[in-house]
Image (tube, rainbow, N blue to C red):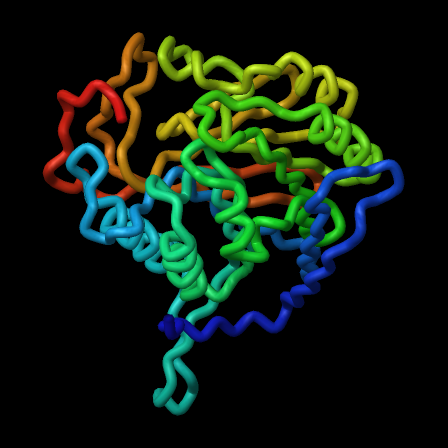
Length: 316
């Protein structure tokens, strides 16, 4: 797909560095993406999208919503809000620039996993002309995701000199709930020790704490206690972000902030005993990360919910 934007950002250089596992690390995909910024006084902008639930057939619908259309609408919203038009001095050329340095998608990219589905997602994200890293969700298939893009093999994103994002796989093919393998937990512990002086963000698909929705909490991170035992010993961890819950969510566990973003399609109603669709429209979350550890964040949504949603559905 041809990019409709020419991004001009001379202050940012991307250095792809797929490294071998560090000493004692048996993680199979220890890829590192380093993003250097020339102006450390400016915050680093990251955009999170999640749970796109794309089908191989672009006309297919999830509970009455065409997920391809809603995804494209959210991407258009991101372009409108996060990109700035710049007209050249001769007024002959229009360029677009952005402060966004990373797009992070936290799982369930596909509702019907297929290479064509993932390739189409990657083509759309490619129009943003910024690096995008992926996490597997419970509706994704790991091998297909891995074969479809190199982005899914990135597990560490170094943002400037003060921040790092650690990407954890909580998903297992054909399982709704999340669970880290012992290998994944050992990798987290070892990698946190590698970054004692950076502010750390941990990204995963499943929610590691209760979201106070009975039915959703049944499919959260099953071994969350083991996860938090490691995080509690790592004071540099500032933020945990996740998908899966299809809603804006904010909580605090000790000094660690826990945040989720809306889905780009169907929204789940918060504080629900059983499966319930919310009437809020799709959206995304943005972050500003400051060198001193300060975090600014917000959620932006489409102006209205796409028509045709089946609010009587009991699940999918």
